[in-house]
Amino acid sequence: MTTDNKRPPKAIALVSGGLDSALSVRLMQEQGVEVTGVHFYTGFCITEQQRRAGNPKAQNRPNDGLRAGADLDIEVEIVDISQEYLSIVTHPKHGYGANVNPCIDCRAMMIRKAGEIMREKGADFVITGEVLGQRPMSQNRKAMDIIEDEAALHGRLVRPLSAKNLPKTIPERENLIDRDRMKGFTGRSRKPQMALATQLGVDDYLQPAGGCCFLTDENFARKFRDFFAHNPEGRLDHDQIMLLTVGRHLRLPGGAKVVVGRNEGENNMIQGLVTRGAVPGARLMVAEGVKGPLTLITGDAQADLELAAAITARYADGAPEATLMVRLWAPPEQEQGAGRLFPARAAAPERIDPCRV
Ligand code: SF4
Image 1 (cartoon, protein in one colour):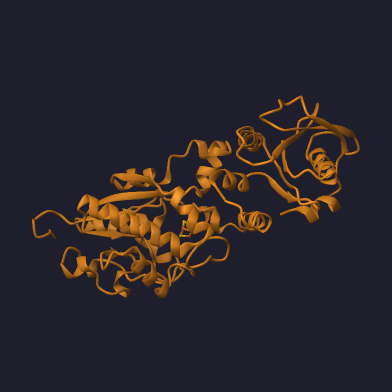
Image 2 (cartoon, rainbow, N blue to C red):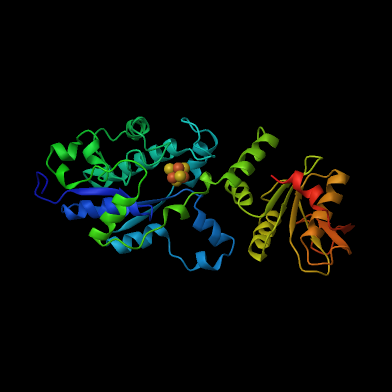
């Protein structure tokens, strides 16, 4: 099929790296549509966070959108929406899903931006891999209608995997694409998608369980809520978010927040954030002469400092009964080796467990 001016139809596809978006691209390519992909960088991608924390598997893995683009033989543009995205994460108009995932606002923002790209590039419509009834929050009919409305695409949003269950779109009415060659998938079962993947030869995609968004993670959600419970006027920026994704988080009885690195990559991230002043009032602790974590602490009640030292000793490599010297210092004013020393013995689990965030 061709447009009035005899060129093939053009579509902008949201490409996450997952199976559904890949299948929707393939279904359009089968109809002769020229597809350009767009992959949005939100700052909440699990793979990106693993990369920053030095995870070797993530280091070697290409960007999910670019990898999918190479497999599908389409150009994929990476669009950074991370600054604007923060406002919907902290104040979502349509609320959160099970954790702190603002899925309806998130989809609406991404599809609206894809619509802007569609107009800039003179494309005819936008496609997504959404499946009616697949996700409880954002893929029920009411939510999908809200998303389409807020994305302001006015009939130019095509969901090829569920198209037969949705109203006819403009490109269908204009005969740019054939409704009969799209699908009518509904519900949570992945079987129809797996079968279609085999039929279309799509085999390299991000597993749904590996998801690319830690806003759906309940551990992250607890830390996120704790941050606002203790900073009602607080501004969550990308440094704070990065801190919420690393280490063991504890809230001590005097109100101090403690983050204990779990490995070298996390220790480096914590050190980098504190050294460049990204966490107001934060100081660092380390047990001297043994291998162990770097601990970040905000707050200065004496009892909290002593407990933080005992927690640092707990996760260090010293003998459980040994008394270690734990140093507290305040970068960037103080170098490691300066600051205050605390003698500390490893805190018992009964002292630590109630403090875990
Ligand atoms: S899971 Fe994350 S990326 Fe996906 S729609 Fe929800 S908030 Fe957006």
